[in-house]
Length: 374
Image 1 (tube, helix red, strand yellow):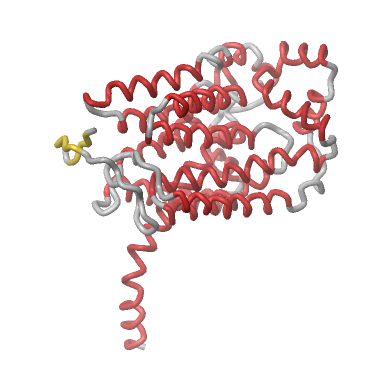
Image 2 (tube, rainbow, N blue to C red):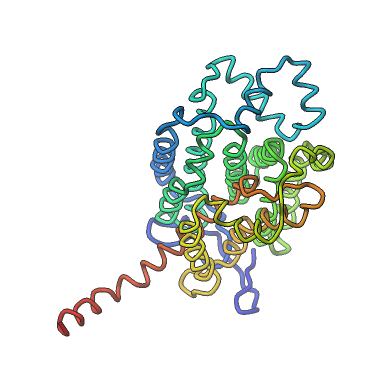
């Protein structure tokens, strides 16, 4: 494998596992799994997210969209088929899972919302696992915890809609890609292909995450000696896409039900705050994310441009996609692209952690100077 540094191609040795104090291998996507014990840290953000989402889970009254889910999953099979044919085919997998769920558990507001709470908790754990591979164990833990406290996570983790399922599906597919990059054996390639198909079936907009996958795949398989691995990974992704490639075409014919969505100037300006459900939180997270991307792109001690490019594509491409395709799909709505939240959490955690490491050594001398001056 090769990497480009300052315009010069250099050979790269096999990546060592990142330790608990430094970001992952510099200058390229990681290709070796971190220490197994570090995976247990994912339980901490997962538990935190679950606790946050379960708090008051059944207290809020269901609203129109949740009643739409309840209506769909309680229809007879004949009426359910007709509903899918007319308007809601993009939600077919979520509805089918929820039909089984209510048969097993029940359909009170609390019971209906449990799957979303569990999905967001699982996603917090996945964010930790992804980030520890990309930028190291400490940032992985911070990213998972940061994801857990994003207002949109607790809000949509308490809603009977597919938004949480879409978010966790995108994160799961990304983790499967990282595992396939580590060792492109057939089982891992099949797992990645299945995860891509699942991601698209939960909601096809989540397939925009594949832009980030492409960036990482291209960087990780660069070089003539990686041709076989490159095609293996491409086959795995293509295998998954075959199962869902028809969804966007059908969805474009069912967009009348969401024709009320606007993409005017006001909607565009409000999009970031609406996506995180907090303007101050969006601002802080945005600043930290810019810092994180800048560190990964420019800072010599932590530079890893493939990871920066991958995370930026994950964070930005889905919102741009729903804006550009608005005339056809009418899907420019913040809650349709919650699949980007893991990327923002990882970038922001990277920015916060590395800023702390840069600033902290200077705080002691600065404090001493201020004390003497005082």
